[in-house]
Length: 211
Ligand code: ZN
Image (cartoon, rainbow, N blue to C red; front, top):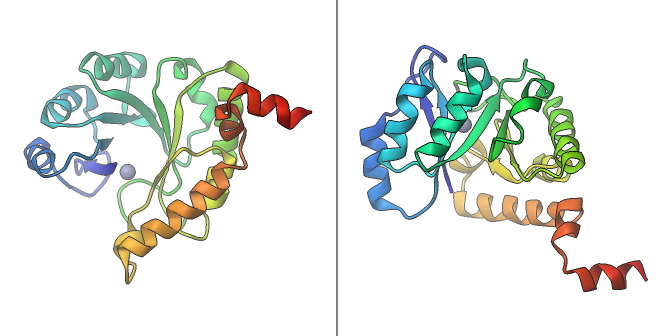
């Protein structure tokens, strides 16, 4: 999928793209368009981005006065709904919406700029979310965004991440295609070590493993 960072110059200092550019993007690719709204008024803009072609839309916990309603709005418009938390927000703040969301996006840098260094505590936040998911029998995906490279992708996947966002480590690599393949391979290997992978195995295979 393509991860599209939407910034409004208010919630974060940078300014990126609006619905008309997303519409143009939609015309040239069949990839899923994953929208990360770093904006002050997600309730107004989310439906416009979904109409323009967004497949999934995530909104910041820190930007939503009525988060539950914002998530329902996104689902009602036909997209997958995600919630994002900044590095300073604990994951415990999300407990009451975990049954509603399709995914949780953990910011592993402060939102607004590319090229920042990964914040190591993010891994613990992912582990905690993964525990909530396993204990509650929930199915939301965990996404991570910021400072991910070939050096830490395996660690975050082992901790519970399903969707990895990579910007600088791909677009600034001498060979971006190689960089993506290398990270995918590392992520696949790491995923096989997790309970999520074990839970995908057919019942028969699990029985024979136990024997
Ligand atoms: Zn993003």
